[in-house]
Image (cartoon, rainbow, N blue to C red; front, top):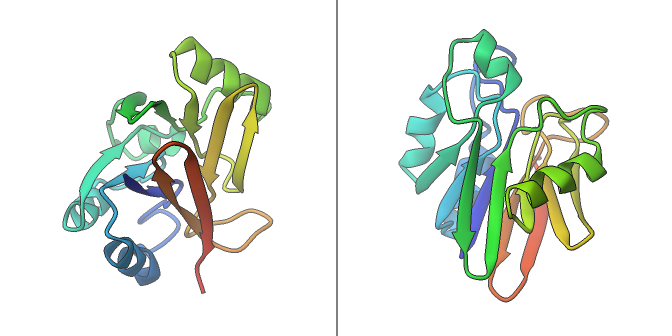
Length: 163
């Protein structure tokens, strides 16, 4: 199973459109599902992504401000993995790995896909894989990024920079 992973795209409040490189990569990689970890700020992005594959998206803190309403979290079961898709708002300090692991475990998950920090991260802590694709439009301390993950017997993640 191949996943396309995004977060913090902020279309139209901070960026005019989703970078074409993301859409092209998702098509080229033939992703089975696209996961967006919140702060879309416009639901129009979902229509664009649905032309490529199935899409799951969750509410980010900025989505409230712009009137976008999505679930606060989604739990997906893929192969032997339970994945929590969760923006990360409410985790303090922002992006705290221990609290993200706790959030995953309290939801019975061994993978958490999160955003909110705008900083890409792939790590594992206490048996939980933490994936943050960064932001494809408004990165902090890095280049614009997104991710592709392959889930089989393990979870392999590539963070991709947008040229």
